[in-house]
Length: 180
Image 1 (cartoon, rainbow, N blue to C red):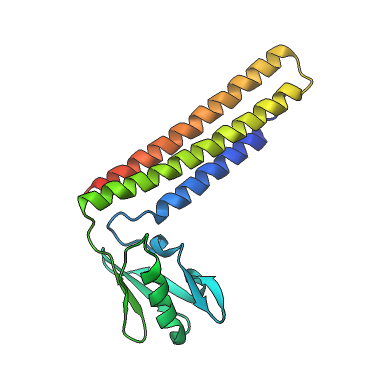
Image 2 (image 1 turned 120 degrees about the horizontal axis):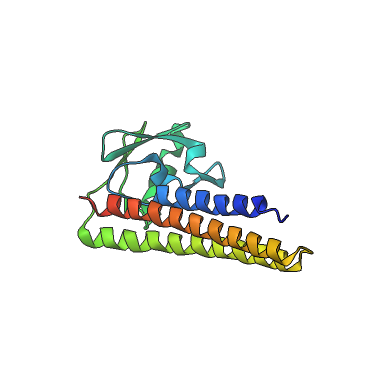
């Protein structure tokens, strides 16, 4: 029998990565994961924002970034401001960095959906690559022809199942982005 568990795990990892990428996509409401891609120059090296501060939500349209070391506040502010994909303008009061989340325009919403659709395609490509790896392994395996056919159908079913999960997650996110 051909073992498809390894390929299922790889597809699950691709789906998990896709979900993590979708969390970073801005929807007009504040979410701490929006800043997860921000890198801050602190202590002479680049570090993820979550290693130099705590990010919390304060209301639907405000993020509070509380640094562990107040001397990093200017670096945190400039790192958030310089990430043009976010389009955010933080302000600080010497203790915390406040990041207001401006409302999204219709044009910006459509642009964000287009960006998110790139994640969909990347994830589907990863899943197709896993399927191709499985087919190659199946072709070279010394198995009876009917077992190969059954295993190939199982792999195709897995591929369809994971592609459907990606599509439904994207539709949900698209609805969330386009909702005013």
